[in-house]
Structure formats: C-alpha cells, structure tokens
Image 1 (cartoon, one colour):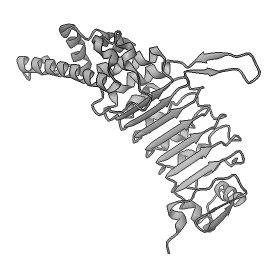
Image 2 (image 1 turned 135 degrees about the vertical axis):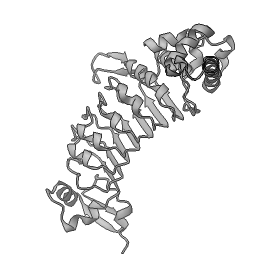
Image 3 (image 1 turned 30 degrees about the horizontal axis):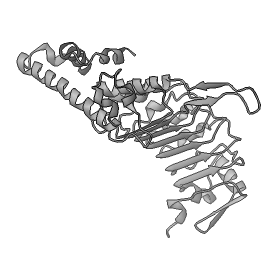
Image 4 (image 1 turned 120 degrees about the vertical axis):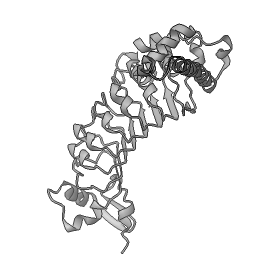
Length: 322
C-alpha cells in the first residue's frame, strides 16, 4: 500500500502537533521517536520521511539521525539550538540543507563532512563564522550564504567544489555591531571573504550564476581580476544587482567605452582576451613541437608568459599574488 509519508512529510513545529497527508504527529511523539536509542516499528513512517522542516523557537530536540531517508532538511528560527547536532552527519542521503535564522550556531559539526550527496546548501542569517569542512561537498551545485555577518572567511578549499553552478553570496555592506539603544558601532564586512572566492573562481569551470551583493570597491576589483584572468566558460548571470565591473574599468585595463558596458559585455571582452592566450599557447606548441618542454607547462605559466609577450594583461600578476 502506498505510504503518503514516504514521499514527503513537512513538520513545522509551531504548534503541539503537525498534521500532514492524513497523519497527525505530535511534537512529543516526534521528539521521542527521533531521540530513541533504537528505532522501533512505530517509527517506520518517520524513517521513511523525505523532507523535514523544523521551524520556531519550540524546536529543541537534537537527534534525528534515524531519519536516514531524508533528502531535504530545513532548520529555521530554532533559537534554542546553539549548535547543530553531530547526528546531522548520519543523514548521508541528504541533498538539500537549509539553515535559517540560527543565530547561536557558529559552525557546522565535523560530522557534516559525511554529507557527500549534498546538492544545495543555504545558510541565511546564522552565526556561522567558518566553513572548514565544505570541501567534502563535492557534489554541491548550489551554494547560498546570505546575511551571515559573523562569517570571517570562506575556506580556500572552496575551489574543490567544481560541480558548483550557482553561488549566491549576500554580504551586508555595513552592519551594526552594537545592540539597540547602545552607541552605534558600524563596520564593513571583511573583504577577505570575497578575495577567497575570487581566488577560487578559476577552478569553478561549471559556474553559470554568480549573484553577489554588498560589495565594496575592493571586492569588485578582486572578483574582476579573477574573471579577467580565467573567465568561467559558462558564466552568464550576475543576479539582478550585478557586479558593476565598469566601476573598475581603469584598474582592469579596459577600454574607455567599458565604463558604459554591462557585466556580461565585460565578461565577453575577457573571454576574447583569453582566446589570445589560447592562440599564443597553440602557436608555441606548433612551433616547438610535441616533444618540447612547452608541453609540460601548466596553464598559469602560459598566462604569465602571455602576460609578458602580449603586454596587455599586466593585472594578471597582481591577481596571482593576491
């Protein structure tokens, strides 16, 4: 007999019970079953659960490791959760993880490195400071980090997430450090977050959508230098805010008319310049032959050689040394 809970159960724990698809699950029952040391036969509907949404300050239970069929998990506005439970790493089939308004959560547990099937990760308005284990999410295609004012940096290992096709990074341009009623202490976000992302962009060859906001001029320049050096071949969308690369047209050695160009037009210009490098490399190969030492040079070396010979890519050295 078809079990309607096998496909989807979404429990939003504002009220004492959650009713879905003809089933009524009390909060106490859900907590008891998910915190049990051993699953029982009465827990079968829960172990078949595919989607779980836990929302509201009353969500305090910390064990859902038995829900091994979960594909989608959302934790939202759970003010009682100060740290994510280690059992999160037992949800190895999980494909979508959303963390929203978890201000007390400063990091992902080490166990999340077991979530190797994760496709989408959204972290919004959380207290996350670092994401050291993110390199384990090698199947990740969508990464969204929004309004996480405590975020210190992105790990350099983000360059290993080569399956990424969408990155959304919303950083508040300025934000308040002091509590309401106290003297205002305003500071800008740490631009090292964007510098790390800029450095990783050349490795993300499947990237199609790059949506960044809250950028300072230094951020725009760092990303612009990266795109100039290694424009991702599939990138076509910069979100409705855009990068506004034209603001840095002089620092990026763009022609004067680029001050009126869109981000997409500037990216296309970068791609045309990149083709000059490819032609240069192909010419070296043709002239020197397959047995030449040229064949052992990596792409970065070719870029630096082309930088010297072609003369128009002086910013590449600055990008490589950032």
